[in-house]
Structure formats: C-alpha cells, structure tokens
Length: 265
Image (cartoon, rainbow, N blue to C red; front, top):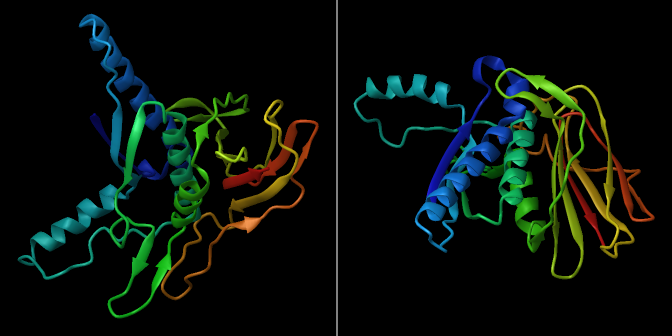
C-alpha cells in the first residue's frame, strides 16, 4: 500500500473552502493513483498499488498547536486533555463529504482509518467516571459503516456550483451510492450550500427499485450547533418527508448545509 494522511479545518474562517475539503482529498487520491500507475507502466508491471488512507479527519490543528505550547511549559502534566475538538454541524457535513470521497475511490482506496475514535478528535466523547455521548461526526460515520457496504456505483453528478477561494468553482452537490448484496441502494449526499436547499434527482433505471425506505438528514438552523456533556442530544439526524421514487427517478430536496442518507428498496 501507499499510505495517505490528510486533515481539514476552516483556514482563516473560510467556510466555503472548508465545505469543499473533499475536493482536495479526491485530488490527493487521484494524483497518488496516477503516479503509482505511471511508475507501473514504466516498469511494465502488472501490479496495482492500492491506497491506505489510514489517517483522516476534521482536526482544528492550529488551535492544537497553540495549546501544545502551554503543555510544554508545565513539565509533562499527567493525562491532560489533548485534541478534544468539539464538532459542529458544519464539521459533520464536511466529515460526511470526506466519507463520500473515500467511497467514490473504493476501487483503489481499500483501507481507510478514521483518526481517532474516542475523545481525541473523535466521534465519541467520554468523561472520567461519567457518561459517554455522540458528537455530530458520529452519525455520518455510523450510517456509512452500516449502509455503505456492497458495491459502490459510478455516480455522475451534474450540479450547480459555487466559488471557493482554495478550490475554485466547486459543485454544491457531493454524492455517491452503494448497492447492497440484497439489491437495496443507499444514496449518500451532501449539500454544501450554507443558505439554499438543493433539489436532487437521481436516475435509477435498471436497478429494480420501487420504494423509499428512509431519507434522513443531519442539518440544523444553527450550523455551529454541537453535542456537549450538558446537551448530548442537541444534534442528530432527522427524518425528511416528501422524498419520492417514481418511474425510476428519485426526487428529493436536500436542506442547506446537510448530510443526507436515502435508502431505497
């Protein structure tokens, strides 16, 4: 394997570019694959090098670097709280988009590891001798783990765009779909617009689907909403009404700044 690492945060408060972080992740993957395949061609080798994206997450790295300086001044404190980022709805939408990027490259990214799982830049938080609770990023991770199993479909997106400082013109829609062994299909989709809902139509002809099992969305009127020790269930996915499947076409509306899971049978 070739090992890849990447972490993302809103640099200088640039939320539009932050929401497009998966553009960088997909480019990173494509460039490494192209380089490996180029070398293989030069060597006339039949071997395909796969990728292990074994460190990835949303991580507020500059804030950690500032805090780290205080630890250096206190002579190795015992069990300090390190890297305990508290994730917002915005963070969860970016996190879900990164999951979509990994699924879209599952032909070559055959290993991927979230860093980390508990307390340290993690989807699960705990208190010593106290409760545990789910951060906003827990939900995209859990849903993708449960429903993103099977065959990733080749989804071609035609989307309105918006302008970002880091990545230029970027699609508002980021999406993929996975077909399970039982024939069910799950669509994972992110609306990157911070202000506007996004109509979604998906052509599903030939997949023998007839019903919408569920459409859930993680979104909130407050994009900075978080789950905390005092309010551990402030943010969670909610059911979306009005999503239909008729004559092979799925129709839905994606709320502004949202992570969506649409299950079809």
